Amino acid sequence: MKGVVIWIASESEQADGMADSLGRELLSRGGRVEVLHRDALEKMGVEDTSANGKAAACGMLARHGVIVITSGCSEMPEVSLDEVEVRKVSEDMLQSKEMMNVFVRELELAGLVPPPEHDVHPEEEEEIRKKLSDLGYL
Amino acid sequence: MLVAPHGGRLIDRQLEGEGAEALLKGASDLPSLTLNSRELNDLEMICNGAMSPLEGFMDRHDYIGVVDLMHLSSGPVWSLPVTLSVKPDDPEVQSGDRAALRDEDGRIWGDIEVTDVYRADLEHEAEKCLGTTDGSHPGVAYLKGLSGRYIGGSVRAIRRRDEETFAQYRLDPKETRVLFRAKGWKSVVAFQTRNPIHRAHEYIQKCALEIVDGLLLHPLVGETKSDDIPAGVRMECYHEILQRYYPETRVAMSVFPAAMRYAGPREAVFHALLRKNYGCSHFIVGRDHAGVGDFYGTYDAQMIFEGIDDDELEVVPLKFEHAFYCIRCQGMATAKTCPHGGDQHIFLSGRKVRAMLREGKMPPEEFTRPEIAEILMRAAKSGKENG
Image 1: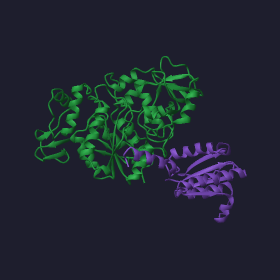
Image 2: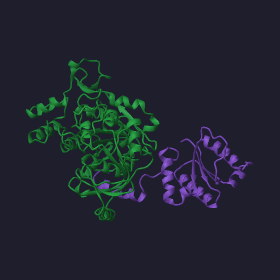
Image 3: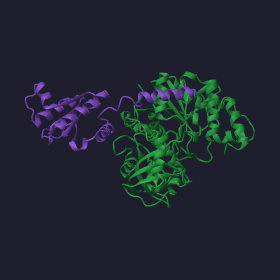
Image 4: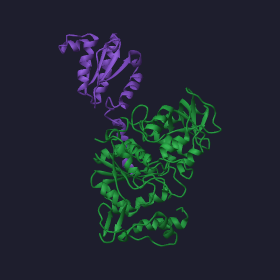
């Protein structure tokens, strides 16, 4: 799977929470995910935590197949992210779980994030197994 | 791990029990759109996930993308339009409306959130998707009977299990996926047919089974041409032969409730993608797959796959040549494996077989298993077998 930068264009703390939430969802699907807040950059030793510095760091990770989620800057920087897929999303577009699902679904269809690991919920799988058994398939 | 559904996840928009009751209650006051037989088949296939990632009938963006470029507007490869046509007696609907979906007898089967109503160039659709505008092609004839306006939008469907034909064989994609996992199959080949099974089919299926974990026999039971062998007769043939000649632990049979479009190459890709949603990693493409008359070249349906990236398709087409019994080889073969001439080969056309059956003559055992010939002969005598 190729990498992607998901740029949540907002400086609010709420956007950081959205980035974390999105990160957890994609991690649960087995994706290679990094959520890059300002402090994460500092921990990595990145001195330039401006939008340009952040974009450059995101780009480097995404080039190696990582799904990078970042927030904290309302505008995309001017730094070149050639050959890196970037999806900019506003805070408004991730307000609810339902809206986040729509956004993630678009990424799924574009082949940028993995699908959910289970195509059938474990409880439903048990019911189906019983049906298959009753029908003589198992 | 099984192959992922097309577009990443299985769509499930079927309602049963309280959900179905709520839909019925809400839909009874809505404007109603009438679905023809093919559209009803499509509604079922969209809502049970077989047509994932589709969540409804196509809007103009998907329609144009599919007709002209074989891709949905969201990116995935897709080869045939899945559309809902405006009928003469339909009420006017527009984007934002919700409407009930009824069959031609007025029974509600689902609802639609309309997102688009658009005019389509049906001649262009026929040319691109069917490769012809000749009205003697059943797919073209179907299009010529439409209004030229389509309605797009996401749909939901009511599941009425107690009324379904072949109920014991009707497995949704999520059910076949559970079945394959339970059997420990990681690679599964699907075989689609709208014909009774002859030795050539059996040979191809068993060749394919040599390289994968399991075989899904997936006969099409949706709408077909009136002169095709009825699905009930075909199912009886398969049931008989499975019991006698196939290893129980390696084969499963389920029905494929799609309508035939007779779109040849485009439909071969369509069939492969839908079987991927059922959890199949491989799909058998034989001679003139989904063809009709002389509209397509014998191997056109195999060649179309060469123009599609493997990464996009994620289901492997297994391409087989015409199979026959060779007297000299004393076995089933194809031109790839047999050096002998046609005079040594036993193969009968469908027309010839039907004529023999009508006259009460058994086809040779090298062509058809006797158990199958008996079923076909019985059907021919009772008038169930057409043509």
